[in-house]
Length: 213
Image (cartoon, rainbow, N blue to C red):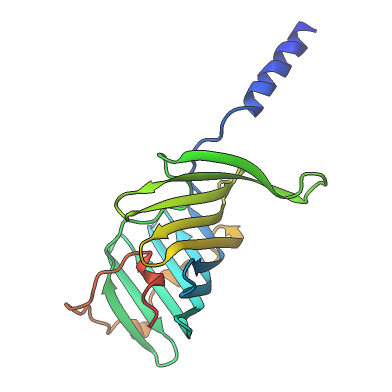
């Protein structure tokens, strides 16, 4: 009986432990939407994320200031280069990528907000346990709030505040752990002739959603 009581107490203590910041799986792919508080930007897209090689591929369809756009980009952070791909006319723009690789998950200096169930916990398989965190990114000049799954640290949403757009909301869904086609990080053959223009303005991960006009 004493052993059972001790084990019960240990189990209760483990279950009551406060969640800790975490990193998402290093290889992920899925879909996302982005919207802004001032309603100037809305996008739907797919992403491929490789934290091991520090690279991303983004495919987007969206609206910027009431104008629609398509966007396809390869971001190679180790090389400091990004390719904007235009399949309709087989052209490619090569630009400097001035940014640190954006690691999905919860930054170590985040503050825990709370835990919740998306859906319901009253029926098996009908709910998803998630944790929400908040913090500040002085280097980007804004606050953030992020929600990830309790098990696996899979991104659910990410909110980031900017002076120009207010809150930007990134929502992730249809996430898959792993990458089915690593070839998505290889620029098409017609990108081989693309030259890095000296007058090109460096970009960062957030500015990708700002310059759609």
